[in-house]
Image: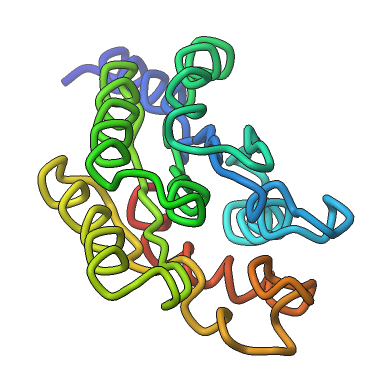
Length: 202
């Protein structure tokens, strides 16, 4: 190969980015919207900070979460969010309000699948965050609710965190007085719960 040819190849290699810069959209409910906290204290902002440390600012996190959101509401909003932000990765944190309102796990399944498929059509990778609800809803409903996330993740072949609040739920110091939303002290643990699965997608 001539010196000219080597120079061309080297020049081409220099144009390739040294690392993939991902745009991550968190699409969730009040837990991701930092309910009861200053938004800067929430796990989504802390996730951006962790990514800044790990990747020197190459990745961007966008919080498109809405307090009170259900999978039905999320499905109506998602298309606009995908079009607006064109994310590389969607962290899907919805379903908790469906459970707290006793809504049908069958409908939740359908909504989650629809949102995942919409995201895939836009070339976005999906990380699904599973949820559990208090035991007072009854064993049968609780099992149907929790298994919905497992089934959806398996059938749609997406990255999955079985229980987003693992190590936080039930810990008085890590939860707000309502027993539903994590406190300031619980936010770092939420980042940890997401991080193992997320870093495999980056």
